[in-house]
Each structure stands twice: as structure tokens, then as C-alpha cells.
Length: 237
Image (cartoon, rainbow, N blue to C red; front, side, top):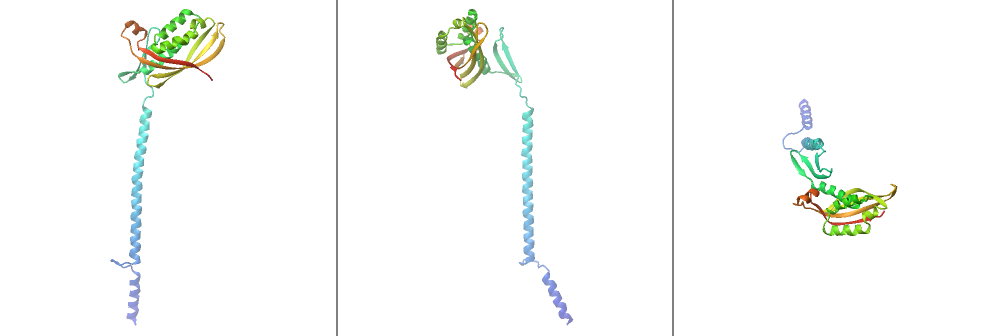
């Protein structure tokens, strides 16, 4: 009787213990599932850790690049060469020990001078002729013929007998290639100094840079700035 009870207790204990080996039991299935879940979590942690280091590296490069760009100088030193009359004849941008000529700045200045010389009017006939002479020294071909035709409609010396015209160039913009657009205002004043009105004008200009070997021409136009085509019209509001 005692032996039967002992065997029965041993069987119950054995039934409650997990079985080892290759047997398919609830215990082995639960253990496999747990190990699989742990491995997945570890893989995810490793992936997120790798992405975090990559993101940190990209952020570091971005911050370093921003600091490098911010540390660079935003100012470009320029050297302006002027003649005895104060006119700009050369412009150079300094980059270290090298000097680079910027012809566009020369053209920009020439555009201002061209309009001021051709369109300004004073009561002094000699001053008008001097300005026109400087302006026509920059014209050739179709541009010269066009300007002569336009000025015949209102000769500056005839206009100067009744009023003066002050020219204020507002902008000179490069369009395409060697074509520019120049916008200016003409402020008219009576001989008593009272302002008569303001007119806005716009011109399209095409130019060439051909320095002349002739010393006399070179002194008056060292850059060889020459306007080949030119047209202007009043801008109506």
C-alpha cells in the first residue's frame, strides 16, 4: 500500500517537470518563443543604435559645415583705379595674392556715364557740348545714328534755353550676353530753379570692349567700351 502511494507521487512530480530533449512540449515551445522574442528585440536595439550613430555623424557634418561657411569672410576687397578727373578706369577684386579684373563693373560704370552724358541738359552750351562729346565717343554704327536722330528732335542747347534736365540713373542690369537695360529719371527744372516734372526712361544697350592701340583714343576710353546698338523710350506709368 505504501509502495503504490509512493509511485503515484513520483509520477505526478514527473508530469509537472519540463521534459528535455527534442520533444515538442509546451515548455520547449514557450522557451523557443521567448528566445526568439529576445533575439528580435536585440536586433532592433542594434539597428536603432546604428541609425543613431549615423544620424549623429550627419548632424556633426552639417554643424561643422555651417560653422565653416559662417567663418568665411563675406567681404571681397576691391581696388578702384581712377583717373585725374575721378573717373573709374579699372576695378580689381583681390583674392589672396592674385588680382582678378571684373569687366562687368567697368561696364556698369560706363552705362551710368553714357546716359548722364547724352541726356543731361544745362544752360551752359559749352558744358552740354562737352558732355555730348564724351557720350558720342562711346557710340558707333547704328547706336551713333540713332542717338543723333533722337537728339535732333530736341537739341540739348535749345532745351537748355528754357530749362535744365538732371539725369539720375536708377539701375543698370545685364540682360543677356552683352545686352543691358538702363533705367533713369529726368528731373526738369525751370530757369528759376523750380521743378517742372519727372520723366522715367529706359534704354537697351549693346556694347563691345575693344581697347584701341591709338594712345589718344586710349586716354579717353581706356577700356574700349563701345556701344553698337542703343534705343530708349519714355516709361509711361
